[in-house]
Image (tube, rainbow, N blue to C red; front, side, top):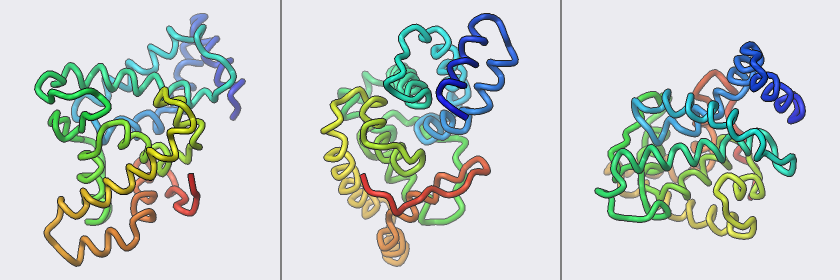
Length: 214
């Protein structure tokens, strides 16, 4: 699979080849779904569909200086923010940089966990400002580089490393708040990055690699 192949499928889809569209959807569905499902509840399937349709419409704006996956997730982020605004931006009373999914009551309805530690981390993640949550999930679940994350978040490359450090710090603080069980808290924080990376396996895919650094 290559970026050029993805673009060929996208062009064929835009030209009316429904099979090409289905192939592109199947190829990238898991990534987009994983990106959205800890931030949206019952709306997740609709926003996945919106993302792929918007990708089709935005084809002419795609430049080959980033990967197709990065382009697609940048669109998914824009669709996510619009949907969260519809859910309750006014009630949150904050900018999107400060908004947390938990403030908007956008509880995830499709995210499975295999351990108590993963459940704790999911609750803690949803208490982060939305773009810090996105940065961590892209790094640990999609193995994206700082440069790729910068494209998705639409920020300068140089700010991503500091955001990841800050996100990890806040996430650790939130873990302390979401469980009263000292043993669970210790086991979660003691293998913090391994537990975070292990949550990638949501749709029959292998666990992420927690050994990377930003």
